[in-house]
Image 1 (cartoon, helix red, strand yellow):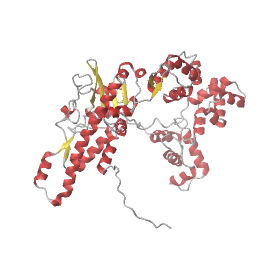
Image 2 (cartoon, helix red, strand yellow):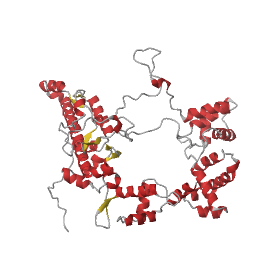
Image 3 (cartoon, rainbow, N blue to C red):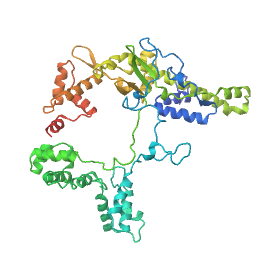
Image 4 (cartoon, rainbow, N blue to C red):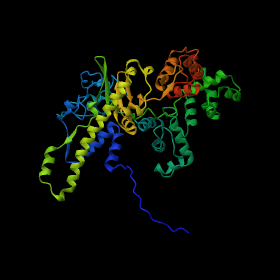
Length: 488
């Protein structure tokens, strides 16, 4: 029997230091999140300070101080104008300091008569306030209003009541505790408020409440059929089984289509339009402009943190450095690393952006039909970076172009073979599908199979299921729905 043996082996393997792991994490952050990290570091580290003097210079040069020579050797791009920012160019500026908040604000001189324009701007009305204002005119007693307010407080942002009525009894604070009939009456009162469908406990009840609001005699038959479909066949309606529904209901298919169109016009989330909108704005990291016939990429100075090392504190510490000040030494090292990380991060972003623009200049000239296939490895090999680094650089980073604001990942797409032996990008094929649908005869829309055949005539071998997938990605309706929309 062999006895166990202990052996020592030496092996080499690569590991990431904690600092390198943090650098990798920061590289994949969006510029807004990264700026928050830097601002937090400035608040905690005495050796860091805002760089107010370098704003004008940093607007035209990358953080590493190198001259951002344009792709064609032309002069560098001047600071980008405000009309290139946001999700829609020519509408929003990058800077948010000029935006006033809702509510009354007073000028610095303290005068009671001096107000900003925002003083007369209405604040967003919440769903709760909207419903409570109506309940004061509807309910006949203080007890009724209390029960309605309790139910209104239990609604979610979409206007649905997700809580059981039995749970709301104790929350009302009434004595005696309301019974089931009182709670049911209070719920009916809430459901009679505007917008229609409010206070429903599921989607089916929400749609039925809205269908019962319309009393137009001309559409009474359609409303009755729609109510029956919602009450009994909502799942089959979601499957768009028009012919099967017509057989089950004993009506013509066009009647089912009319009822289905009516149901689709209803609001499945009646409370969504109340309260402040959770709108997310995109601040582009790179701006691309055409200067004297050459496409040029420069950093957006608004997203580059203005931070520098406080030389006075650093020199003072170095001249009076003692062993017991090890925590300050660590903070000084951390400050130097933060400044260096800002420089390296945005220099890498700019390098990747330059490489993308060089390869996708035809897209910038002619649109998405001219998009070339591009992989992360091609950019990584060109710049001497790891493929994972390019992936992190392109994640949550945006480029403002004359065609719009795009995530850097948008410019990467796999290559699809053509009948001529060449390649075409998936983005270009999606653009071709979009153009075909936009240019089709509305009364004779193109099916996915027909689109696939038209693409094949252009030398693009694309399966019908691939056309369907790309059309769904672009959120374009199917053939049947486009045909019904044209008929109505």
